[in-house]
Figure 1 (cartoon, rainbow over the protein chains, first blue to last red):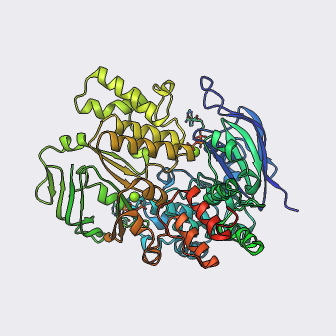
Figure 2 (cartoon, helix red, strand yellow):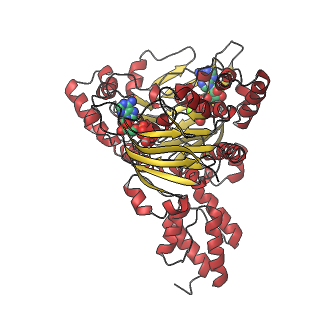
Length: 279
Length: 289
Ligand SMILES: Nc1ncnc2c1ncn2[C@@H]1O[C@H](COP(=O)(O)OP(=O)(O)OP(=O)(O)O)[C@@H](O)[C@H]1O
Ligand SMILES: Nc1ncnc2c1ncn2[C@@H]1O[C@H](COP(=O)(O)OP(=O)(O)OP(=O)(O)O)[C@@H](O)[C@H]1O
Ligand SMILES: [Mg+2]
Ligand SMILES: [Mg+2]
């Protein structure tokens, strides 16, 4: 049985005393081999959660445990070694003069040997399709190339917790699919906790579990199939359901009986096939 | 305003060992009043292309014409400021666009720079905020003390406040929640129609390109790869795959359905409801209607 790697216990946070609370009594746990998607409207508190996990911010109320260790000023340096994070805007995290230096940077802090480093720079840049740009300065990359390089950087450190905050928002659907495949392979192979913050419903479908945020509170927590049954409710809080869900609902509305909530094309086609055999 | 590219090439860091050709011999024409989507894989040259529309980049070779303004290697328009008051660009990353201390100053910066009166700026700020769905209570806040999606909205509001004739949008919905994506695209479309704007949209959403654009240009490695109406371009599955792009999800689904059920439902940019009816028809025929 996998243990809890991340625990939020009744966490409340505000950016300053004058500001309103942006997280209110947030409680959840994430296991060490789980993929959890966090979704929610703009300003619902998702990025704030990410920043609390690696100690860029500290809660005014409640506590956060990573691997049983409380996140405090004293523990953050240890904790950050376990946490890899890609920010919403990769410009905020580039530190190296070249793409290669940048990917190396995270590894240097973690005492990885030179040999392994060289090997991992190659393999991770290859995995994100950026091998040709090893010597390029990060600020000279296109929007999507920056995101790819930032992802290579966290893959290279193979952290225990990987947080991707809209890390593929600038990629085309196909590129997004490829990158997420790479990430999820690593996730299942190395059993790391993967947290993806995203507005991309296709990506949400692949997660083990979904946490839905609304106005700083956890609105709902469940498996994707369950979450997407609440179409109307989700729309009310600024979200939506994937194309197949919408199509399945349109079919139901005109009297085609669909029993199981489909999550992808194959499942819907399968449902229709059974129906077809019966008529 | 019409936009014309004639054999445009653009090279970054020319005459250095790092020289990189981002656009190559690119020609196309965008008629005044049209809504054009620019689509392409990571690094294909989309942002470089649109940086020519307000003179931020000048072609290394070839000609760019935007309305009456001509941009070539040896001939920059005398009045770039005038061009920029007519061409509003929403950048790919909002942080590249925001810089003032407060949101109010940020939104007012463009119009002020172009000589708009104070009272008019107030009015435009108010309008722009409501168009992007932000509350007035945020006006005194720093644009950097915001969530990603809120920053995006401020950046968009700043461009709307200029009231440009050409609206250039580089991935304007990245970072917006699903409702925001739809509301903001609908808002752009409404402006486009009401004010007869020319709109250039860089997008990874084939769905948005289908829904809003009347013309699509696909770029590949700095060159024009395909061009046409969305309905024509987005069914070319193999051609798009060649340049690492996917057809829109609905097109994919129709293809898989037709394959599995040996049917031939056409893609006609139909709504999900219409498609549901076609599927029902195909499955059970008329006898159960
Ligand atoms: N530095 C800051 N100072 C003050 N308030 C902030 C700051 N950063 C964010 N906020 C506010 O905190 C709230 C939560 O922001 P957060 O960035 O966590 O949202 P989010 O869910 O990630 O949204 P998005 O989908 O837009 O990225 C928002 O109302 C935002 O305005
Ligand atoms: N400032 C720069 N200096 C040198 N090369 C650059 C610079 N900006 C972009 N490039 C290169 O030019 C090419 C085109 O970049 P551009 O930003 O136009 O791509 P894009 O189509 O917008 O990609 P994306 O979808 O990732 O945003 C890329 O290969 C990129 O690495
Ligand atoms: Mg965020
Ligand atoms: Mg770009």
